[in-house]
Image (cartoon, rainbow, N blue to C red; front, side, top):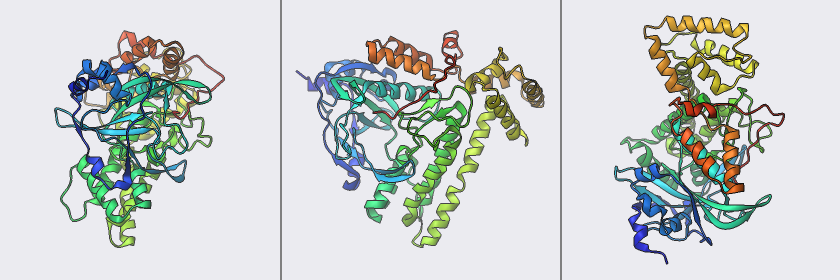
Length: 490
């Protein structure tokens, strides 16, 4: 018997501003109940920051909410409609297996979407079953929390529950539901959807809502260029942060770019071990569209699509609107490059700026690629002056580069200790290595053993701590003739 009072003791405090938007943007419906849900993991610190009662969340009543079997008071569940360019091809999409319960208002006045992922069919399921498998949901939990630890804007994972049901993919797999937290789920694809199937007034309403929710409404005769500018700024910063830690998203479709500037959708993503700009992990990205080196270009392409949707708002004169859009989008690469260069200087302990820094950094990256050096561990070795026996560090080319680097640091007014501390704070001791993630998922899914998962999450919690415990998790995988592949979260 579910105790409704216990559900409310959990601290849910919903607002539902998205439900006030034009009805073409969503379909209201409830989650599809599941048979016998069980807790897998709860993000207790995140729960507390949201104003939630951890013990109540762990109760049967709390589990029933995460499973979609009960709704907290104030929730107005809906599936969001959106469109998107998937690998360059435009199509109508939408939340095919996810429901937005509402917006949790925190004690500090924050507003966060609470979304169930894997909660059943919606009108946008496109023939799918609306469910999710345990492995991909745990994968999103691991990677999103690792990104948070790295200080990179991201959606987060509050909980994962199993459903007690099996779902059919290539084989029968245990079903699960992830509870995802986001600043919002407003995507570039949301604007594309309204642009294609709504009215100009619908578009204006969505733009005004987005400005108010994420950027603070600016009183101006024409605030919409400001919206475009702010989204471009946040994406330029976000993509630079991805590149700096070797993160490869894998599926940078326009429906996977949110205007809040958070990383979203952790299906085929992975972190690069050996430095190779052409690295692709996604099994479906056969042409390398979303390879590591292409991510800035794909972000700019997506932003151009976003700008296109805003044309009716930018100016009543179409030619003038296009000029405004092109001028703003053209700023992306300068902003991105500035963010990336600042971050790379930090990774090398450079507290000042010199004109040759960019080419100097490129020389190092070229050497890393040539000698197949591990991306993360190369910068760690430089941080702690512990080169080991890698081919890169024993090469004459690197010895010459290192002399230039030392000379560059010596020209700074700041102390060596300041440079070292900057490097410690900029070069993570650990990333979610692919083989470690797979080991955690295998133990959880195949054996029901979540201890490997919990230990990995603990190690990833503060990647800049540089503890002895993290050393074991910093090791790259053994060489393999079979490249690592990821798959969309089905």
